[in-house]
Length: 294
Image 1 (cartoon, rainbow, N blue to C red):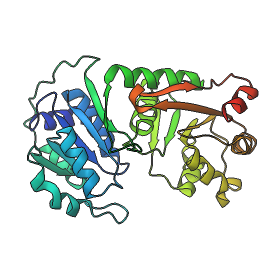
Image 2: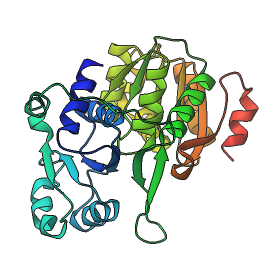
Image 3: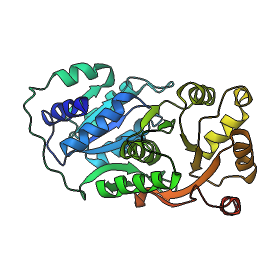
């Protein structure tokens, strides 16, 4: 909490409550601190996929009216800082750019006596952009009440106890990463184990960090099950594996439940509804789970 408040104070040295700041980076602990700091400062966070290129970035930053941007210089071959330099002359509203490699300097730059604003539950917490399958991506306004309620209610359906560990390999720019798998464990007083997705790494972290909850997109779970380490690691800690975002094959459900001895929870949602809208409960019978795969 202390570092989140320091982030909020540093943000308020540069931005006014209600303004929008964008984050363009992979999963990092500082990403989450920026999320929490923006919330305390009354700022709206615009989340950007680090795989996007110049044209998509220009559209999102211009359309959202972002006045600040937090980024990494490069990610998986995407020269992000160079791409920003190309389009920045076309972004007159963009006042401040902060590299996550300079996070400590950013926190230490505040004068330390900033008063945090009062922020209501209907204030916009995030703007997330849709996939753009029927045109250019469109920004979805996600309010605080919706994000926190959706995450808390979903956490309750999992049947896990307060204080347990959650493994989060989901991209933070998406509602599953910065929403359910961040605000869920936060409201359950749990510990979030954050990583970038790699099937072997996720299996290793299940063995070493012993999470009770593992949630990922169905394609990610499929890659985990197919990985050679799936049968070699001690994967006994999860109580529930959750997946969604696309149809889930019945065979995948069988392999996960038989291989891990856990319930497989399938969910469905949409960004416009602040995330999850339908889900299977932990105590639902197996025929309900398989009905959801059809």
